[in-house]
Amino acid sequence: MTYNNDYLLAKAGALVPQLMSFSQKNGLSGLEFMAGVPASLGGMIAMNFGCWDVCMQDIVHSVDLYIPGQGFVTFSNEQCQFGYRTSIFQSMDCLILSAKLYVSSSDPSSIKKTIHQYVTQRLTKQPMRTATFGSIFKNPAPDPAAAIIEQSGFKGYQLRTAKISDLHANFMENIADASSQDALDLMAIIQKNVKSKFNISLQPEVSIFQ
Ligand SMILES: Cc1cc2nc3c(=O)[nH]c(=O)nc-3n(C[C@H](O)[C@H](O)[C@H](O)COP(=O)(O)OP(=O)(O)OC[C@H]3O[C@@H](n4cnc5c(N)ncnc54)[C@H](O)[C@@H]3O)c2cc1C
Image (cartoon, rainbow, N blue to C red; front, side, top):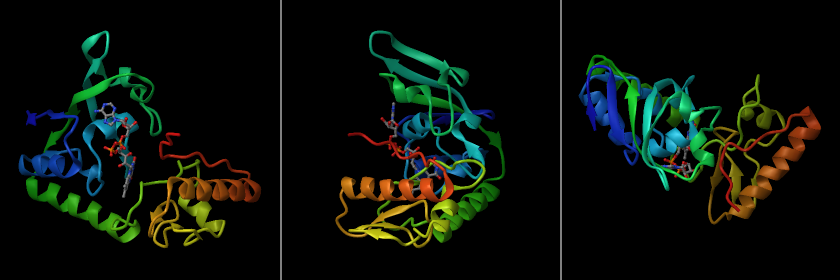
């Protein structure tokens, strides 16, 4: 990773703990919202990762990628076509190599404090120590998916060994040997129930490959 006062340049394979420790050590603020999430920079860009009202779209200056047949190119933020948990990279045959991210100079101790706050919030509100794939469904405005699932009575609901978390209703935990089919079946039950109860069509946030 390299940086100046305005930008941090990182490889796509950089993991969140590496990004946190580098930015904290060098007094670079702007990436703290990622703290505590098991993800790589390339994956977060492709998914337009976001939380605490910030997403990758807000901090990406440009992305270096390799496109078979075209070679090495750089996309501006606009060319990434970021949307809610989407980007152009999800429908492109390409490999994200690195990205230039907007940062600003700040006091390392205040960055550390913010990172700590975000990690603590995740640990208290989300199942971070069990096997999950992150949020199950996108938040259908205006209500968060977790609240809708909870109101439907599914918080803690278990189908075989796939369980809706007791801590956060938009997380599914694999409490033993749940299969992908168990996860899909549980998602389908919730979608059907929420549709008939609230006429809301919950859309998966998790990518499904079949
Ligand atoms: C406990 C937990 C909490 C989470 N909380 C959040 C949250 O608050 N907000 C949120 O948005 N997400 C959250 N997630 C989901 C997850 O962190 C994101 O999806 C993340 O953006 C991508 O993770 P990843 O690096 O593992 O990528 P992967 O899951 O491996 O990949 C995601 C997509 O990116 C593509 N991709 C990965 N690397 C590259 C590359 N170099 N070039 C091209 N394409 C690439 C993959 O092909 C795939 O389509 C959470 C997940 C967990 C487990």
